[in-house]
Amino acid sequence: MFADATSAVGGDEIREEGGVAYAAYSDGYDGGFDRTAGDYAHYMSQVRLEGARTLSGLLRRLGDRGHPVTCAVYTLLMPWVAGVARAYGVAVVAFRELIDALDGDSEKPPTYVVANTFDAMEPDALASLRPHVEVVTVGPVLSFLHDGHDGNSPNDLFDHDGEGYLHWLDTKPAKSVVYISFGSTSVMSKTQVAEIAEAMSQSNRPFLWVLRKDNCRDKDEGDAIKGLLATASAATYDDDAGGGMVVEWCDQARVLSHPSVGCFVTHCGWNSTLESVACGVPIVAAPQYSDQGTNAWLVERALGVGVRAAARAEDGVLETGELRRCVEIATSEAVTSRAASWKEEARVAVADGGGSDRSLMEFVRRIARGST
Image 1 (tube, helix red, strand yellow):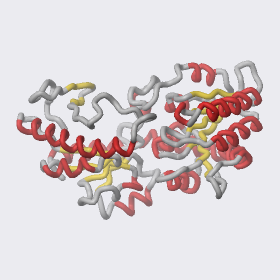
Image 2 (cartoon, helix red, strand yellow):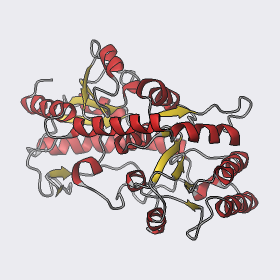
Image 3 (tube, rainbow, N blue to C red):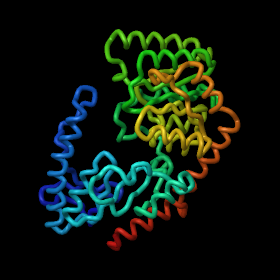
């Protein structure tokens, strides 16, 4: 945390916005990193080496000039921050999902784990962790729950496709649209695209599908996928506005908040899962790797706000018939009702006086007092 930092400190430009002060350190890629062309493994290695060096220098300079950092908050992708912070006697706080709360560093556990969840959503997991590490629940951490945000996020990884998809959603009946997105890293095979396209073609439901441009490895594959999508879009939900729409990226919060969206076919990454729960949108979970299987279990078994789709054993492909079956379950009255109830639970948690709001305020008070 920066104390009253509002200008340049020792050559470091300190910028204040919304009551928060910012100072930059380098990841070794000051000109930016091209995710589609660069070596991601080398990038992460460089971030660790160069980031540790420049962050260490920043902490030292801030301390020398009377603006000491008292608390370092880091995410799962940057566990090396903990070692840098401890070298300067700075309290260490991990901002993570519960599944990763005790993983990552080979060093001692962080002082706190600030978790992007809320007590009602994961009570058993929280109870099992709290004897070992102090977990502070502050979620769902979603800007639209706090400030009515309805514009493009400045932190999105990709540019949005204008706002045409939002106008298209406006033409659809309430809870009718199947929203499909597998996040920022998963890549679909041509076979998987064909299965989803056929399911949408048969379903007689409008759909909005996010398919990133880096999903296609070559022109021939790209042309084949475009043909499949064109056929599905034309065959589905025949009306004047068209049955399906495919975009390279979108503002997911605005899509999930739209009244025409009836279910979300997702890889079940944690951010997507939280956004869907907070918007009351039922889920068809198609997990790919990492924590996504656990998140899918939570969605189906613990919360009852969706259904996990069974992928084909030999290649992990979600087949047409299985996707159609899962969409029907997810849009049933029982699941839709539970999703609406969890939407209210999520919003109560972050409202003034809610469980996550109280936890955050107490955490800030303890850090400010130096009670670590």
